Image (cartoon, rainbow, N blue to C red; front, side):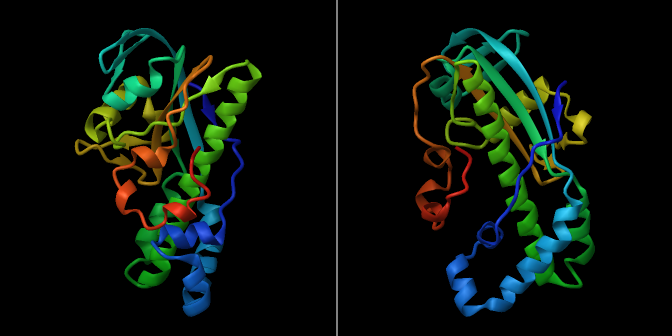
Length: 232
């Protein structure tokens, strides 16, 4: 299966602070020591990142009630899936990770220096998100070059596509071992800094909003207005 390893991305200090559940402006004004920890964590964490993107493209053979059948006979199923992919010609199934080195480092220092450990955790999360952004941008450009459009990226656990079903379907379509990723019986992925996505590709696709609209935390998210680096 195709693997991308040359996607360039960067993370800002604001994205690291937001990944810790903090308001960057407040941290900079009131708790500059936490900003220093975040800067240190970024210096430690970035060399440990090993970004890899595994993907496969499938033609859509049949559209049914809340079910998309693919060219290999397998399927994706859910209300969210049918809402966004029913007008697409094909689907990109994607698994991306920044690897386990940063996770191993977090486990190494979290008990001896929990503040730095949590900051490093945020670096890993922000990096995974940034990698997802650039991955989606890459496939958006590929589609545009072929006079096609893309849907918003869909991820298991979004409203209308259960985590358990979605993860099982994606891992049934991709050989995750090619990038060192595995799925547990509780639908968790390891390394933890990993994301799974599907994107529809086709002509004249309808725009059904952004990812935030289908996030289970949408109504309670205090950082949505600051989420300028979202996958879109």
